[in-house]
Image (cartoon, rainbow, N blue to C red):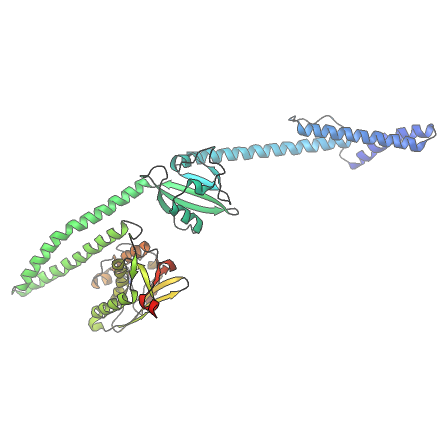
Length: 434
Ligand code: ADP
């Protein structure tokens, strides 16, 4: 096969030269040239038609041809072969992807940038109820109508997954996780976590029941110990009974903290919300903290915005804020400085408790809100803590849609801030009058 462009030029000459020569012999070179050029144009047209016909056909072999057209046909045939191999590879990748995603127990759904359903696997049909042919191209919101899902989807903050009952079976709990990819496309993965939720429920019930059952025997023990200690006793016995009484008191606070935590864990949201007077609540916590500080004489300051209250559950907020303030008292040496502030800005309300106490090493900060996590076991027991304080704070805040931010430096002090969104704020009655 020729590969040089010269072959095309020599072909052109061969086709034109003969008629031109005959024209010259017959006395009209120009007519000869016209005839030669027409013949050449006809041959080109014929080859173009053959090419078109071949491209439209399913024939793998190119039509037999010579010269420059032969090269073109061969090159095109090679390109087509390469293209065919590539699409075969791609088809096999797609088919393997579809096979593996069909085998997944989790529902996988792809949504385009207009929020229409583009693709999903078999588990999505079983768990969410999408129907293979009927739902393709339909808006996702027409099929997943739970307002909590719609709010989560539209908000676009997908760091935390969302738990909801399946739209098909109310007793199945799904955990939705959304990932954005491409330009505005989304991948939704829904996992059946019913078994995990049941296990967690069993754990919570066990803790709640065990704590509840421990209450009565503890009250009886405490009662008898008090009666004994009211009597004149030999010194060693009095010491032993006083120690027993202190431990019984500690166990009582443990049981009551465990019960409180179980109640807070039972649901993710507060059942109803009422305006809570934050300034008043903080004043009363400040008074309690001064009493707790006693002869350690901490300087406990309060600076609260009088114009804004919070919408929430008064008892839960009181528990959370007092835990933070009492911790500051317990972990700040005598005469230390503790400041409680309640501020409001464009982002929401911020309640911070700052102290110049012993501080916490940064390696502990991430795990500080875990149940029974202690930085220093000896010191925590000495201060009378249960190890559940910050876990209670975290859960109480979560139920109010708020978050806890902790900053601390050993030897410098700590700052615990509760951040509430603007929609949890309400104007105080006195700010509305003035
Ligand atoms: P505890 O009952 O042990 O105080 P918490 O959950 O309230 O349990 O606190 C967990 C740990 O965090 C404590 O053991 C303590 O080491 C540390 N901690 C909490 N608040 C402070 C603070 N203001 N300053 C220093 N350490 C603190």
